[in-house]
Length: 171
Image (cartoon, helix red, strand yellow):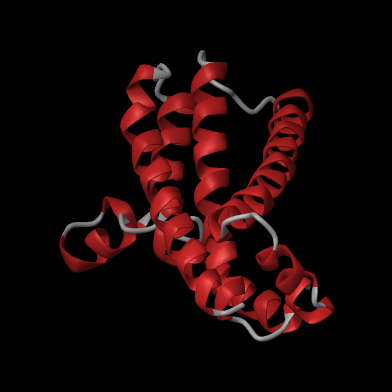
């Protein structure tokens, strides 16, 4: 939207680096995602008896790291899009593909051996699912999911770097 309205050009003309613009956007969307997760967990737990496990810290760490990876991917998609409509469409397509490959739709492919399992474990969805499953059903602690949190943070950081680099050249 900023590109369409001309505000992106003004932002880039100011004393702000492209990565700071991307980071500011990501932080805002991360907050929205985290609030959505709190509502979903609360409703799931209170209305349906969904177990949350014994580590709310683990849930929080996993949710924040997943929100970073998700929003950074959205920012990267936006840098390749010519309009907000195109970004919305591409984001929706990527969401469904990654959800299916990551194990959110149907069978958890990350449990499989071979190329399918390998590709599935390249998605943020697979690592989030593994972490949430461990916390909610296996009694894992925050320390137990730190490897998943680290992977998600790494994915988010890499996508953030790619998005900010791409923004620099697409102004």
